[in-house]
Length: 324
Ligand code: SD4
Image (cartoon, rainbow, N blue to C red; front, side, top):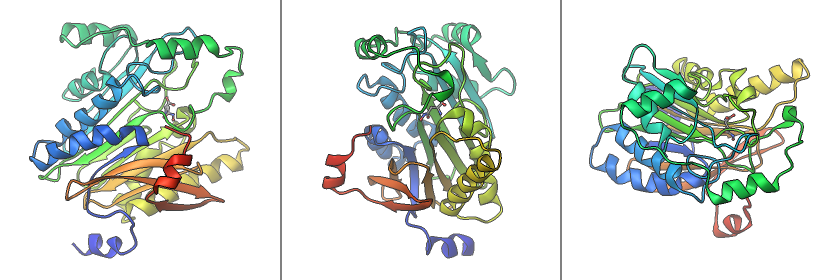
């Protein structure tokens, strides 16, 4: 394909089959890669990667042990989008569902009632036999107890450089999909919903074009429908790296024009040729890529003075990294 070949020359990330947000997704991606190698459908790989993060008590922003809301409860958002059918499912503000991504995936098979919140989502998950558990780990309770709750709610930021896990994948049939899961912003107001389960904001998937996903301050991501914006740029011929950078840049400039300060935002994307891209407002946004040889590597996107660079971190960089 000429378009794919022409673009590849400019891209640092080519021939990919999965891309995910944050260093915390590395183990899940390493578990998912052999599944894709065995030609399983893409959803199995995505669920494996996201569930690994949800289940890890050491990861403090997704699933078990997630960041509590203002009431000290872990309240989770998750979503899944099927790029072949445009099927979308999501759960918002759910408590005690062990793997919200599984419920979101299940809901993505329906044409109606596919985005459920709070009690309705919980009853649905119970009726379908999904696993439940108390998602507040001793560590997340300790973090909550030790934090001053009187902070200005208008100033809430993404938590210490890691938050939502977003996984984009493409299988051997070139079917694409995306799954995301998060506990959202630390000390958020109960019932607050971020970008993650909002189609077009936290994620978008179209196997004819590509997928994109976002992490960061959800209220600010939603104002630009950033994931859809990136996919539309790819639909119009942009490679994923340029699409990520352009969408983010345009969004930041729009914020500037109305004097609205913007919280941190990072985005990833992959087109239907296996080219990938990432952009961020941070000086370091680690992300993970699995290539078509099923080798999984950590990369870093860095924004210095508005210019994005992408590199593979060496041991020295990893030793000094204080994020996830
Ligand atoms: C939210 N976007 O709920 C999520 C949180 C996140 O880095 O990704 N923070 O707003």
